[in-house]
Length: 79
Length: 232
Image (cartoon, rainbow over all chains, first blue to last red; front, top):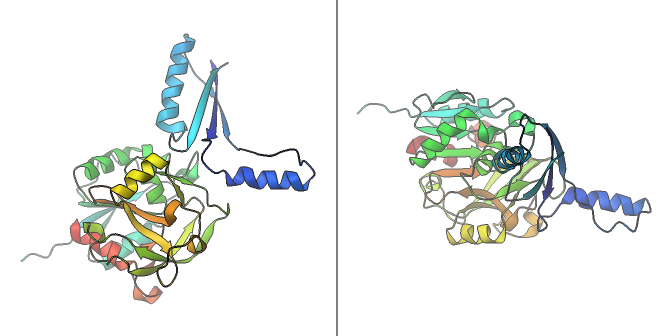
């Protein structure tokens, strides 16, 4: 099964990278862009038949390794 | 009386690069430095642990994240939980945070740049074994060299850090004043080093191992390494 994991910085964590990108966008004329947040996208191939089981396992992996729950949120989608 | 030369395990990950200097610093302070490979499941009989700086696993995923889950860290956790001394330097602190042995997490520096320079640090604690050779309010000068040193903790975690007085070192001016102007990386409360509640685990972004041999400058780093050797 293909599983997509999106990892983003928590709302209250500053993202200097996103802010730097926003500043350049403004300079290029994209003045309508008021905020940029940069995250990570991971695509996993996971063996398994049952979608809910696969999702639970990947969520467990997110908590243990893929995301740092102190600064990041994650979202798991079984495709 | 028999001559005691405590064995200090210096953990090596793929990508560690401060390990040789850390081992030399341990030897200069009277310890026996024992390299411990990241795949090792035991600590080879050492009584103290030093996690050196570098870029373990190429800083993949997040600095320290992969190393925090390596076999040797299970042994380091056991050692720490039994009260054994652990000193983490730079990437070593990042690893201790990712392993949950110290509170909070590292974000990229506010400037997004790798910073390599000498900074001033104010000692905030001197009542733990690993900080016992320092005095509160003392100002030290040590080099930093990192891109992820912007320490962060959510409000509820930070409150606990303050309540339990876990901040060991803060960035400051040459006179010891803590202000944003002297904070090189944006770390919350200008935190440069942290201890755990029990005081046997210490993590710091600056590099004490670079300032032990007087040939390299005033040995501001010696009290850290010497304390680790002495209590191990």
